[in-house]
Image 1 (spheres, one colour):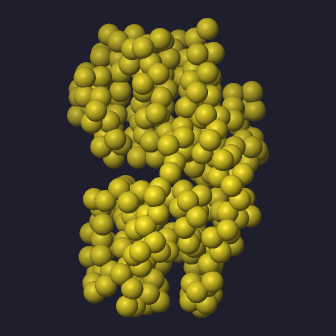
Image 2 (tube, rainbow, N blue to C red; image 1 turned 90 degrees about the vertical axis):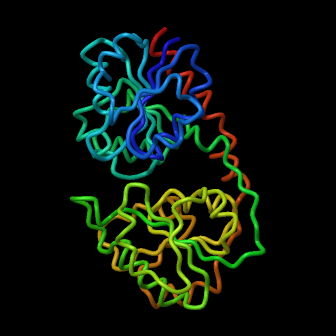
Length: 316
């Protein structure tokens, strides 16, 4: 089975990474921030950002199926879905986050033959957005198959997981990451506050951060979660990851407008905090009681094998 894997963003790359060892023959067409994930596969690697012969090399490889992550802007994933459609090569995409479904497929302009989703909620939301139920399969996210963190409770860091709202056009949740970080600096004065910028964001926008707050772009997410007492974000999936590892987690979205995109709120696991006053009140009483059945549902789901089963069906 010859598989072409494509990814642009980190989260999409994480979703396809566990699948690679299942392919007898493979090529990796990788762009953007996801490149850092695939250093062990240099022999099969095509640089989507800098190689002028990507289409020629893909044709030379002659894949039987194309497997992609998803991202919001025009990306190598969308280009390869379109390429596959023209060449009669089936394609499959994995959706890694419970939000922005239409943007991931450019309002269904770049639809693969199969869409793999994390859970029933994601499937229902996509159907409500007009996606065809016939092409959606609930498989889970392969990234969650290796989903464990050894918690280090000896440290007292507060970790802020940023997102790139200031760089995303057309998305206005009523706040942005700069509003949030300024509130956190004020409230957590005296704590060590670690800011993790989004891979797609411009780190320079945090140049005003001083004192007890530091910017960390190097450490792994797993290590940062492990070393932190409290993890605060907006609607990032990293909050879900930390929650499943029984860490103290807060979704803070001051002045939220419209639908809450945080999966913790969608699953009624945590209430999103929308005012600075309520954030200040909540930090001393954060519930970390998580049902083991919920953890198992997302992390012991054999998602990698389920996705590969769908890949095989496309070429059988």
